[in-house]
Image (cartoon, rainbow, N blue to C red; front, side, top):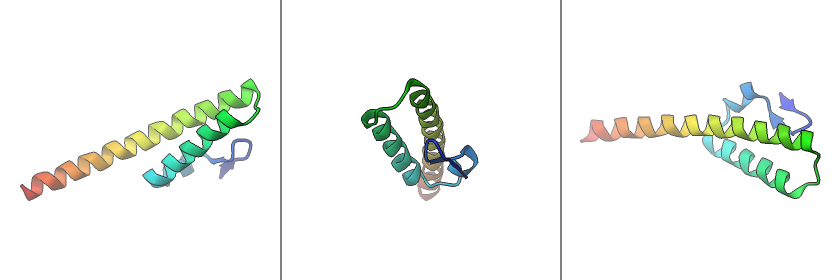
Amino acid sequence: MYDQQLNVPEVEELHKLTYEELVALLETLTQNMASKDIGIELATQMYEKAKTIHRIASERLDSIKVTLDSLENQNS
């Protein structure tokens, strides 16, 4: 499901996206915040959604790093 006003997936759907998809979504949301004439309420909602996307992407990247470190240690 999408948050229609912000045109981004709901949190449950965000967890299904790849790291690259999350980064692209974050970039799009950030560009929209910077370039569109939006009210303070929508800007606040966009900022909160961007924080959520950033957190999920960060967690995903941390998980990938742990996996890579583990694989590296197995090959040493």
